[in-house]
Image (cartoon, rainbow, N blue to C red; front, side, top):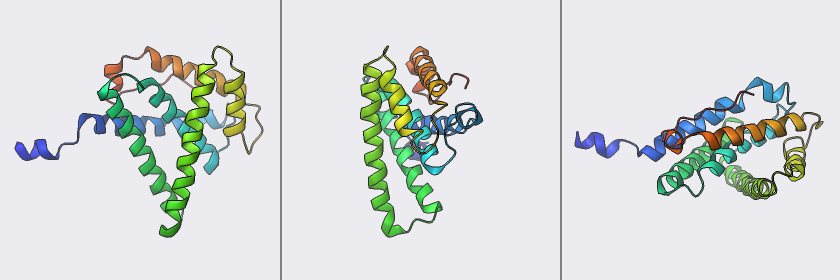
Length: 176
């Protein structure tokens, strides 16, 4: 019993991992790549995963210590998955650190840009421009208006979900 308690992961860690698994599932939704024309490339998938991670982090911010711990666990799991993906793609051990640093800089840049775009809502111009610049950087941006609507629907759906539910790792995404 004592050992079980010692080695059981903290609830925030379990929730963060579950939220990341939900991000992965949602980010693989075919509609994102078919109907919304997000590029099905390494870069395109990075942008879609990052967008979903950001949406959850944005929902959890300033919601108290347990939400902060859960958000940190989500972020840590995301970073760990990026590291693992680089290694699976054959990036050598000596290069992983440099690539992770670039991905980290890209992530923090996206966070600042999404925060700025969300702060300017209901004006959607900044968010639309951000999606075109990031998600559609290497592809036609014809799906950007649909993806913009999708992002706003996800943000609203997350805002409507009880925090307690998210803190257990249970998230319900709006249909794509």
